[in-house]
Amino acid sequence: MARPPDPEALARAIAATCGDGSVVDLRRLSGGASRETWSFDLADANGGRRGFVLRRDPGEYGGESDRSTEYLVCEAAAAAGVAVPTVRVLLRAEDDLGRGFVMDRVEGETIPRRILRDDEYAAARPRLAAQCGEIAARIHAIDPATLPRLPEQSAPTQLDQYRSLLDTFGEPHPAFELGLRWLAERVPSPPSRPELVHGDFRNGNFIVGPEGIRAVLDWELAHLGDPVEDLGWLCVKSWRFGVADKLVGGFGTVPDLVAAYERAGGRKVDENTLRFWVALGTLKWGVICVGQAFTHLNGFVRSVELATLGRRVAETEWDLLEILDGGW
Amino acid sequence: MAQDRPTAAELVEAVREFLEHDVMATSTDKRVQFHARVAANALGMVERELTNGRELVAAERVRAAALLGHDDEVGLLERELAARIRGGSLDDRLDAVRDHVRATVREKLLVANPGYLPEAPSA
Image 1 (cartoon, rainbow over the protein chains, first blue to last red):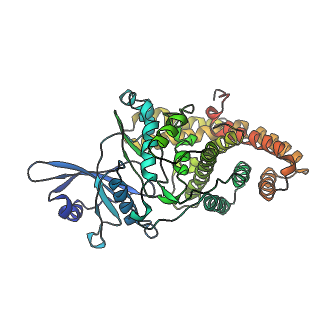
Image 2: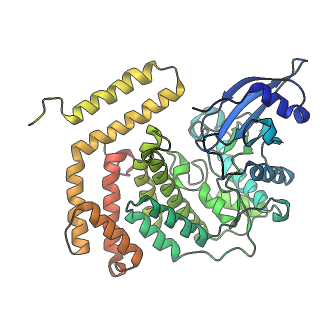
Protein backbone atom coordinates (compact mmCIF):
# COMPACT_ATOMS: atom_id res chain seq x y z
CA MET A 1 0.00 0.00 0.00
CA ALA A 2 2.50 2.62 1.17
CA ARG A 3 5.58 3.26 -0.94
CA PRO A 4 8.74 2.95 1.19
CA PRO A 5 10.85 6.09 1.52
CA ASP A 6 14.02 6.14 -0.57
CA PRO A 7 16.83 4.97 1.78
CA GLU A 8 19.42 7.21 0.12
CA ALA A 9 17.25 10.30 0.34
CA LEU A 10 16.59 9.45 3.99
CA ALA A 11 20.32 9.07 4.75
CA ARG A 12 20.97 12.46 3.08
CA ALA A 13 18.15 14.16 4.99
CA ILE A 14 19.47 13.16 8.42
CA ALA A 15 23.23 13.26 7.73
CA ALA A 16 23.76 16.79 9.07
CA THR A 17 22.07 15.98 12.39
CA CYS A 18 22.65 12.26 12.91
CA GLY A 19 25.90 11.71 10.99
CA ASP A 20 26.83 9.98 7.77
CA GLY A 21 25.84 6.43 7.17
CA SER A 22 23.56 4.21 5.19
CA VAL A 23 19.94 3.44 5.94
CA VAL A 24 19.38 -0.27 6.51
CA ASP A 25 16.62 -2.55 7.82
CA LEU A 26 13.93 -0.16 6.64
CA ARG A 27 10.53 -1.60 7.53
CA ARG A 28 7.00 -0.37 8.07
CA LEU A 29 5.77 -0.51 11.64
CA SER A 30 2.23 -1.71 12.22
CA GLY A 31 -0.64 0.61 12.99
CA GLY A 32 -1.58 4.07 11.86
CA ALA A 33 -3.86 4.32 8.85
CA SER A 34 -3.55 8.10 9.00
CA ARG A 35 0.21 8.17 9.55
CA GLU A 36 3.06 6.11 8.20
CA THR A 37 5.78 5.02 10.58
CA TRP A 38 8.98 3.41 9.32
CA SER A 39 11.74 1.94 11.42
CA PHE A 40 15.32 1.92 10.18
CA ASP A 41 18.93 1.75 11.32
CA LEU A 42 21.64 4.17 10.37
CA ALA A 43 24.84 2.15 9.85
CA ASP A 44 28.04 4.19 9.91
CA ALA A 45 31.46 3.36 8.43
CA ASN A 46 32.79 2.14 11.81
CA GLY A 47 30.17 -0.54 12.12
CA GLY A 48 28.01 1.48 14.51
CA ARG A 49 24.24 1.32 14.24
CA ARG A 50 21.54 3.57 15.65
CA GLY A 51 17.81 3.00 15.46
CA PHE A 52 15.43 5.67 14.16
CA VAL A 53 11.78 6.05 13.26
CA LEU A 54 10.40 8.09 10.40
CA ARG A 55 6.88 9.35 10.97
CA ARG A 56 5.23 10.94 7.98
CA ASP A 57 1.93 11.73 6.30
CA PRO A 58 0.92 9.14 3.73
CA GLY A 59 1.33 10.54 0.23
CA GLU A 60 -2.20 9.76 -0.84
CA TYR A 61 -3.71 12.12 1.76
CA GLY A 62 -1.48 15.20 1.91
CA GLY A 63 -2.83 18.58 2.72
CA GLU A 64 -4.30 19.49 6.03
CA SER A 65 -1.99 18.03 8.63
CA ASP A 66 1.17 19.66 9.84
CA ARG A 67 3.95 17.43 11.14
CA SER A 68 5.99 20.42 12.25
CA THR A 69 3.54 21.12 15.07
CA GLU A 70 3.90 17.58 16.38
CA TYR A 71 7.68 17.88 16.10
CA LEU A 72 7.72 21.09 18.15
CA VAL A 73 5.35 19.69 20.79
CA CYS A 74 7.65 16.68 21.21
CA GLU A 75 10.62 19.03 21.62
CA ALA A 76 8.81 21.04 24.29
CA ALA A 77 7.70 17.86 26.06
CA ALA A 78 11.27 16.51 26.11
CA ALA A 79 12.53 19.83 27.47
CA ALA A 80 9.96 19.56 30.27
CA GLY A 81 11.22 16.11 31.23
CA VAL A 82 8.42 14.08 29.67
CA ALA A 83 9.57 10.70 28.35
CA VAL A 84 9.27 11.04 24.56
CA PRO A 85 11.43 9.72 21.75
CA THR A 86 13.98 12.44 20.96
CA VAL A 87 12.98 14.11 17.70
CA ARG A 88 15.95 14.69 15.40
CA VAL A 89 15.05 16.02 11.97
CA LEU A 90 11.99 17.76 10.57
CA LEU A 91 11.81 16.89 6.88
CA ARG A 92 12.02 19.77 4.41
CA ALA A 93 10.41 19.91 0.98
CA GLU A 94 13.80 19.50 -0.70
CA ASP A 95 14.35 16.18 1.10
CA ASP A 96 11.65 14.79 -1.20
CA LEU A 97 10.43 12.36 1.47
CA GLY A 98 7.04 13.86 2.16
CA ARG A 99 5.94 15.64 5.30
CA GLY A 100 7.26 14.16 8.49
CA PHE A 101 10.10 13.88 10.94
CA VAL A 102 12.73 11.48 12.19
CA MET A 103 13.08 10.53 15.84
CA ASP A 104 15.10 8.08 17.90
CA ARG A 105 13.70 4.57 18.06
CA VAL A 106 12.90 3.64 21.64
CA GLU A 107 12.95 -0.13 22.11
CA GLY A 108 10.04 -1.72 23.92
CA GLU A 109 6.49 -2.93 23.51
CA THR A 110 3.49 -0.85 22.36
CA ILE A 111 0.97 -3.62 21.67
CA PRO A 112 -1.59 -3.38 24.48
CA ARG A 113 -2.51 -7.07 24.61
CA ARG A 114 1.14 -8.00 25.13
CA ILE A 115 1.66 -5.29 27.73
CA LEU A 116 -1.41 -6.57 29.60
CA ARG A 117 -0.67 -10.28 29.32
CA ASP A 118 3.00 -11.12 28.71
CA ASP A 119 5.09 -12.26 31.69
CA GLU A 120 7.83 -9.85 30.68
CA TYR A 121 5.69 -6.91 31.83
CA ALA A 122 4.20 -8.54 34.93
CA ALA A 123 6.36 -6.48 37.27
CA ALA A 124 5.70 -3.26 35.35
CA ARG A 125 1.92 -3.58 35.19
CA PRO A 126 1.09 -2.62 38.80
CA ARG A 127 3.24 0.50 38.39
CA LEU A 128 1.86 1.75 35.09
CA ALA A 129 -1.17 3.65 36.43
CA ALA A 130 0.96 5.71 38.81
CA GLN A 131 3.52 6.30 36.07
CA CYS A 132 0.74 7.54 33.80
CA GLY A 133 -0.33 9.93 36.54
CA GLU A 134 3.18 11.31 36.94
CA ILE A 135 3.73 11.67 33.20
CA ALA A 136 0.35 13.34 32.70
CA ALA A 137 1.10 15.84 35.47
CA ARG A 138 4.36 16.71 33.76
CA ILE A 139 2.66 17.13 30.38
CA HIS A 140 -0.04 19.37 31.84
CA ALA A 141 2.54 21.53 33.61
CA ILE A 142 4.25 22.48 30.33
CA ASP A 143 4.15 26.23 29.86
CA PRO A 144 1.94 26.88 26.80
CA ALA A 145 4.35 29.71 25.88
CA THR A 146 6.94 27.05 24.95
CA LEU A 147 4.54 25.37 22.52
CA PRO A 148 3.65 25.99 18.89
CA ARG A 149 0.20 27.39 18.24
CA LEU A 150 -2.32 24.70 19.19
CA PRO A 151 -6.09 24.65 18.88
CA GLU A 152 -8.09 25.10 22.05
CA GLN A 153 -10.64 22.30 22.41
CA SER A 154 -12.92 22.81 25.38
CA ALA A 155 -15.54 20.30 26.50
CA PRO A 156 -18.45 22.17 24.85
CA THR A 157 -16.44 22.54 21.61
CA GLN A 158 -15.80 18.80 21.50
CA LEU A 159 -19.43 17.97 22.25
CA ASP A 160 -20.54 20.14 19.32
CA GLN A 161 -17.81 18.73 17.11
CA TYR A 162 -18.74 15.09 17.70
CA ARG A 163 -22.48 15.76 17.50
CA SER A 164 -21.91 17.35 14.07
CA LEU A 165 -19.58 14.56 13.00
CA LEU A 166 -22.18 11.95 13.98
CA ASP A 167 -24.76 13.80 11.86
CA THR A 168 -22.59 13.60 8.75
CA PHE A 169 -23.03 9.80 8.66
CA GLY A 170 -26.82 9.97 8.66
CA GLU A 171 -27.29 6.88 10.84
CA PRO A 172 -29.46 7.06 13.96
CA HIS A 173 -27.68 6.21 17.23
CA PRO A 174 -30.16 6.69 20.07
CA ALA A 175 -27.54 5.55 22.61
CA PHE A 176 -25.22 8.34 21.52
CA GLU A 177 -28.13 10.80 21.67
CA LEU A 178 -28.72 9.80 25.30
CA GLY A 179 -25.01 10.25 25.91
CA LEU A 180 -24.95 13.68 24.28
CA ARG A 181 -27.88 14.83 26.41
CA TRP A 182 -26.25 13.48 29.58
CA LEU A 183 -22.94 15.12 28.74
CA ALA A 184 -24.48 18.49 27.83
CA GLU A 185 -26.05 18.62 31.30
CA ARG A 186 -22.73 17.90 33.01
CA VAL A 187 -20.15 20.04 31.24
CA PRO A 188 -17.49 20.68 33.89
CA SER A 189 -16.36 24.21 34.62
CA PRO A 190 -13.29 24.91 32.49
CA PRO A 191 -9.82 25.05 34.07
CA SER A 192 -8.64 28.52 35.12
CA ARG A 193 -6.33 28.46 32.11
CA PRO A 194 -6.26 25.85 29.35
CA GLU A 195 -3.39 23.39 29.63
CA LEU A 196 -1.55 21.20 27.14
CA VAL A 197 -3.56 18.04 26.56
CA HIS A 198 -1.81 15.13 24.83
CA GLY A 199 -5.07 14.12 23.18
CA ASP A 200 -4.41 10.39 22.71
CA PHE A 201 -2.96 9.42 26.09
CA ARG A 202 -3.79 5.71 26.33
CA ASN A 203 -2.55 2.16 26.36
CA GLY A 204 -1.26 1.63 22.82
CA ASN A 205 0.63 4.91 22.72
CA PHE A 206 3.12 3.99 25.43
CA ILE A 207 6.41 2.22 24.80
CA VAL A 208 6.74 -0.14 27.73
CA GLY A 209 9.71 -2.13 28.99
CA PRO A 210 9.93 -4.58 31.89
CA GLU A 211 10.54 -1.61 34.20
CA GLY A 212 7.62 0.52 32.98
CA ILE A 213 6.81 3.31 30.54
CA ARG A 214 9.77 4.42 28.45
CA ALA A 215 8.13 6.92 26.14
CA VAL A 216 4.81 8.49 25.18
CA LEU A 217 4.01 8.45 21.45
CA ASP A 218 1.57 10.01 19.01
CA TRP A 219 1.35 13.70 19.85
CA GLU A 220 -0.56 14.62 16.72
CA LEU A 221 -3.80 15.34 18.60
CA ALA A 222 -2.16 17.65 21.15
CA HIS A 223 -4.29 20.70 21.97
CA LEU A 224 -5.08 23.11 24.77
CA GLY A 225 -7.96 22.32 27.06
CA ASP A 226 -9.02 20.58 30.24
CA PRO A 227 -6.19 18.30 31.43
CA VAL A 228 -8.66 15.83 32.95
CA GLU A 229 -9.46 14.91 29.34
CA ASP A 230 -6.19 12.92 29.17
CA LEU A 231 -6.98 11.02 32.38
CA GLY A 232 -10.52 10.27 31.20
CA TRP A 233 -9.38 9.03 27.78
CA LEU A 234 -6.88 6.71 29.49
CA CYS A 235 -9.81 5.10 31.36
CA VAL A 236 -12.09 4.54 28.35
CA LYS A 237 -13.07 0.89 28.34
CA SER A 238 -11.94 0.28 24.75
CA TRP A 239 -8.36 1.01 25.89
CA ARG A 240 -8.52 -1.69 28.56
CA PHE A 241 -8.27 -4.32 25.82
CA GLY A 242 -10.36 -6.92 27.56
CA VAL A 243 -9.13 -6.34 31.12
CA ALA A 244 -12.27 -4.41 32.02
CA ASP A 245 -11.90 -4.46 35.80
CA LYS A 246 -8.62 -2.52 35.65
CA LEU A 247 -10.12 0.84 34.79
CA VAL A 248 -6.87 2.54 33.86
CA GLY A 249 -5.67 1.12 30.55
CA GLY A 250 -6.43 -2.44 31.65
CA PHE A 251 -3.48 -2.27 34.06
CA GLY A 252 -4.39 -0.10 37.05
CA THR A 253 -6.84 1.67 39.30
CA VAL A 254 -8.25 5.19 39.28
CA PRO A 255 -7.08 5.91 42.87
CA ASP A 256 -3.50 4.96 41.87
CA LEU A 257 -3.66 7.18 38.80
CA VAL A 258 -5.21 10.17 40.55
CA ALA A 259 -3.01 9.98 43.65
CA ALA A 260 0.17 9.91 41.56
CA TYR A 261 -1.14 12.70 39.34
CA GLU A 262 -1.91 14.99 42.27
CA ARG A 263 1.33 14.11 44.06
CA ALA A 264 3.29 15.03 40.93
CA GLY A 265 1.71 18.47 40.84
CA GLY A 266 -1.44 17.89 38.79
CA ARG A 267 -4.56 19.83 39.75
CA LYS A 268 -6.96 18.08 42.10
CA VAL A 269 -9.13 15.72 40.05
CA ASP A 270 -12.86 15.99 40.61
CA GLU A 271 -14.53 12.59 40.20
CA ASN A 272 -17.50 13.99 38.29
CA THR A 273 -15.17 15.76 35.87
CA LEU A 274 -13.25 12.53 35.34
CA ARG A 275 -16.51 10.65 34.76
CA PHE A 276 -17.57 13.31 32.24
CA TRP A 277 -14.37 12.87 30.25
CA VAL A 278 -14.55 9.06 30.35
CA ALA A 279 -18.08 9.31 28.97
CA LEU A 280 -17.12 11.86 26.32
CA GLY A 281 -14.08 9.75 25.38
CA THR A 282 -16.30 6.69 24.99
CA LEU A 283 -18.70 8.64 22.78
CA LYS A 284 -15.84 10.08 20.72
CA TRP A 285 -14.33 6.65 20.10
CA GLY A 286 -17.77 5.33 19.15
CA VAL A 287 -18.32 8.12 16.63
CA ILE A 288 -14.80 7.61 15.26
CA CYS A 289 -15.62 3.91 14.74
CA VAL A 290 -18.73 4.90 12.78
CA GLY A 291 -16.47 7.14 10.71
CA GLN A 292 -13.97 4.35 10.11
CA ALA A 293 -16.73 2.12 8.75
CA PHE A 294 -17.83 4.91 6.43
CA THR A 295 -14.25 5.43 5.28
CA HIS A 296 -14.65 1.92 3.90
CA LEU A 297 -18.29 2.26 2.81
CA ASN A 298 -17.65 5.51 0.93
CA GLY A 299 -14.73 3.86 -0.84
CA PHE A 300 -11.91 6.11 0.46
CA VAL A 301 -10.09 3.09 1.87
CA ARG A 302 -11.55 -0.36 1.26
CA SER A 303 -10.69 -2.59 4.22
CA VAL A 304 -12.37 -5.45 6.03
CA GLU A 305 -10.87 -4.11 9.26
CA LEU A 306 -12.45 -0.66 8.84
CA ALA A 307 -15.73 -2.24 7.74
CA THR A 308 -16.09 -4.37 10.86
CA LEU A 309 -15.42 -1.39 13.14
CA GLY A 310 -18.95 -0.31 12.21
CA ARG A 311 -20.26 -3.31 14.10
CA ARG A 312 -18.07 -2.60 17.11
CA VAL A 313 -19.84 0.72 17.65
CA ALA A 314 -22.41 -1.19 19.72
CA GLU A 315 -19.64 -1.96 22.25
CA THR A 316 -19.02 1.74 22.82
CA GLU A 317 -22.78 2.36 23.05
CA TRP A 318 -23.00 -0.33 25.71
CA ASP A 319 -20.07 1.21 27.61
CA LEU A 320 -21.61 4.67 27.40
CA LEU A 321 -24.95 3.46 28.78
CA GLU A 322 -23.09 1.80 31.66
CA ILE A 323 -21.47 5.12 32.54
CA LEU A 324 -24.86 6.89 32.34
CA ASP A 325 -26.12 4.33 34.86
CA GLY A 326 -23.29 5.13 37.25
CA GLY A 327 -20.76 2.49 36.18
CA TRP A 328 -17.32 3.03 34.66
CA MET B 1 -37.90 -20.82 -5.17
CA ALA B 2 -36.14 -22.20 -2.15
CA GLN B 3 -32.43 -22.67 -2.63
CA ASP B 4 -30.73 -25.99 -2.08
CA ARG B 5 -28.59 -26.61 0.97
CA PRO B 6 -26.30 -25.23 2.12
CA THR B 7 -28.34 -22.32 3.45
CA ALA B 8 -26.86 -18.82 3.35
CA ALA B 9 -25.76 -19.22 6.98
CA GLU B 10 -24.15 -22.57 6.21
CA LEU B 11 -22.27 -21.13 3.23
CA VAL B 12 -20.96 -18.27 5.35
CA GLU B 13 -19.96 -20.76 8.02
CA ALA B 14 -18.00 -22.77 5.44
CA VAL B 15 -16.10 -19.68 4.31
CA ARG B 16 -15.40 -18.67 7.91
CA GLU B 17 -13.99 -22.12 8.63
CA PHE B 18 -11.80 -21.88 5.54
CA LEU B 19 -10.40 -18.58 6.82
CA GLU B 20 -9.87 -19.93 10.32
CA HIS B 21 -8.45 -23.33 9.45
CA ASP B 22 -6.63 -22.74 6.17
CA VAL B 23 -5.75 -19.08 5.69
CA MET B 24 -4.92 -18.21 9.29
CA ALA B 25 -3.08 -21.46 9.92
CA THR B 26 -0.93 -21.42 6.82
CA SER B 27 -0.28 -17.76 6.00
CA THR B 28 3.11 -16.49 7.11
CA ASP B 29 2.17 -12.87 6.41
CA LYS B 30 1.12 -11.26 9.71
CA ARG B 31 -1.12 -8.72 7.97
CA VAL B 32 -2.94 -11.47 6.09
CA GLN B 33 -3.31 -13.50 9.29
CA PHE B 34 -4.73 -10.49 11.11
CA HIS B 35 -7.15 -9.59 8.33
CA ALA B 36 -8.20 -13.23 7.98
CA ARG B 37 -9.09 -13.21 11.67
CA VAL B 38 -11.03 -9.97 11.26
CA ALA B 39 -12.80 -11.39 8.21
CA ALA B 40 -13.67 -14.62 10.06
CA ASN B 41 -15.13 -12.52 12.88
CA ALA B 42 -17.17 -10.56 10.34
CA LEU B 43 -18.57 -13.79 8.92
CA GLY B 44 -19.45 -14.89 12.45
CA MET B 45 -21.57 -11.75 12.69
CA VAL B 46 -23.27 -12.57 9.40
CA GLU B 47 -24.04 -16.11 10.62
CA ARG B 48 -25.61 -14.81 13.82
CA GLU B 49 -27.56 -12.15 11.93
CA LEU B 50 -28.90 -14.71 9.44
CA THR B 51 -29.93 -16.96 12.32
CA ASN B 52 -31.35 -14.45 14.82
CA GLY B 53 -31.59 -11.11 13.04
CA ARG B 54 -35.24 -11.23 12.04
CA GLU B 55 -36.38 -12.08 15.54
CA LEU B 56 -34.22 -9.36 17.12
CA VAL B 57 -35.49 -6.68 14.75
CA ALA B 58 -39.10 -7.71 15.41
CA ALA B 59 -38.61 -7.30 19.16
CA GLU B 60 -36.95 -3.92 18.66
CA ARG B 61 -39.79 -2.72 16.47
CA VAL B 62 -42.50 -3.69 18.96
CA ARG B 63 -40.70 -1.81 21.75
CA ALA B 64 -39.95 1.28 19.65
CA ALA B 65 -43.51 1.47 18.37
CA ALA B 66 -44.89 1.30 21.91
CA LEU B 67 -42.50 4.03 23.02
CA LEU B 68 -43.29 6.37 20.12
CA GLY B 69 -47.01 5.60 19.92
CA HIS B 70 -47.06 4.42 16.30
CA ASP B 71 -45.66 1.66 14.13
CA ASP B 72 -43.33 1.97 11.16
CA GLU B 73 -40.30 0.34 9.56
CA VAL B 74 -37.75 -0.18 12.34
CA GLY B 75 -35.05 2.05 10.82
CA LEU B 76 -37.50 4.95 10.65
CA LEU B 77 -38.61 4.37 14.24
CA GLU B 78 -35.00 4.48 15.42
CA ARG B 79 -34.40 7.63 13.41
CA GLU B 80 -37.41 9.29 15.00
CA LEU B 81 -36.29 8.10 18.42
CA ALA B 82 -32.81 9.59 17.96
CA ALA B 83 -34.24 12.92 16.80
CA ARG B 84 -36.74 13.08 19.66
CA ILE B 85 -34.13 12.28 22.30
CA ARG B 86 -32.07 15.15 20.95
CA GLY B 87 -35.07 17.47 20.71
CA GLY B 88 -36.14 16.71 24.27
CA SER B 89 -39.70 15.60 23.48
CA LEU B 90 -39.16 12.26 25.26
CA ASP B 91 -37.84 13.79 28.45
CA ASP B 92 -41.02 12.78 30.29
CA ARG B 93 -40.19 9.10 29.79
CA LEU B 94 -36.41 8.94 29.71
CA ASP B 95 -36.28 5.82 31.88
CA ALA B 96 -38.41 3.92 29.37
CA VAL B 97 -36.29 5.32 26.53
CA ARG B 98 -33.11 4.18 28.22
CA ASP B 99 -34.54 0.69 28.83
CA HIS B 100 -35.41 0.39 25.16
CA VAL B 101 -32.06 1.72 23.95
CA ARG B 102 -30.18 -0.60 26.26
CA ALA B 103 -32.20 -3.57 24.98
CA THR B 104 -31.47 -2.55 21.39
CA VAL B 105 -27.74 -2.21 22.00
CA ARG B 106 -27.82 -5.63 23.66
CA GLU B 107 -29.50 -7.06 20.55
CA LYS B 108 -26.84 -5.51 18.34
CA LEU B 109 -24.16 -7.10 20.50
CA LEU B 110 -25.88 -10.50 20.34
CA VAL B 111 -25.06 -10.35 16.63
CA ALA B 112 -21.82 -8.33 16.59
CA ASN B 113 -20.01 -9.68 19.65
CA PRO B 114 -22.01 -11.76 22.14
CA GLY B 115 -18.91 -12.24 24.28
CA TYR B 116 -19.00 -8.54 25.13
CA LEU B 117 -22.20 -8.88 27.14
CA PRO B 118 -21.85 -9.53 30.86
CA GLU B 119 -24.09 -12.60 30.61
CA ALA B 120 -21.73 -13.77 27.79
CA PRO B 121 -23.91 -16.38 26.09
CA SER B 122 -21.79 -18.99 24.37
CA ALA B 123 -21.57 -17.97 20.73
